Amino acid sequence: MKLISIKKILYLTFVFSILSISLILLFFQNAKSDWHDFDVFYSAASAALAGKSIYIIVGQYQLPFWYLPWTAWFYIPYAIWPKAIGLLLYQATSVISAILVVNSLTGYYEPNFKVQDKILILAFLVPMSMQLIMVGQMDYILLGLLVLVIWAAELKKDILVGLLYPFLLTKPHLIIPFSIFLFLRSGKRAFLISVVFSAVMLLIETILSPGWYLEMIQSLQLSGQRVDGLPFSTFPSLLGLQENWIGTANLPFTFLLIALAMLVLWKFRSLPTIPFLSLALAASLFCAPRAYAYDLPMLIPAMIWLTAQNFKLYWWLWAGVGIFTIFALFSSSTYWITLFIFSLIIYKSYLILANTNK
Image (cartoon, rainbow, N blue to C red):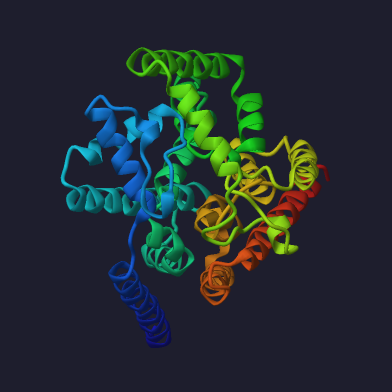
């Protein structure tokens, strides 16, 4: 009994030491961040509130607002406040989303998953997310929506899938294979609801700002010419090829990777919905035409699937991803993480199917 207690105390000390280090890193990162992506989202939502065009918004570093209109609407709850308060609420939403994702998925795979293990995962998410914190991106909020959609698909809530899906199109380049297999799994009803809901929101924006689509196209054209900014984390960038902002610089590679990801997903389509769509998210990041280190949270559902049922044996995976991200300085080398996790999840899927077919 004493030995067990000592081991437990040592483990708890380790967990809270890692958490403390992560919080210190978070504090210093926040002190030097300019949150320039949040600034664009906040400004677009403020323009929408004021009845102005959201596609004339240009933030720091000449960053344009080039998203679908409802992305600006999504940020309105933050834009009704002064920017400092809006940013605080935005960060709180991101933290809550991360906690809910970890809590729900670990509970799905292992109902008795320990609280201290969840805390350790969240602590290792901080170094993995430093670039996201630095620029003020929305990946944890997006991940929360993605996991909610996955749960809706699992529970066959087609209406909810259809209503939530348009908001996933904030980053359509990160969910290409995921989208296809989501609707193959959910069915025509979810797809039709999504199309109709998207059309209604586009009609509303057209009434409010008739020329919005021309302004958006112009913004995308200019962004297709830009290659400066944060280092990309994609297969072509790993090879040293130049990328552009909209991900069209290396389309042959993109098409090849999408085809490979689709073949993998088709092979494992008989998996249960939650692990299958977690695999689909990892596959989507693997073939994304445009991705940064701050998009790595899209791997979290797959990582939870890999580690939840035997966390004491596999906790190192979370540590490795966080540490590698920091030492790679958020460069194109972080694509190795995507390759590694995608390979591991393919292997796990293969073992499951092999055991099922025995």
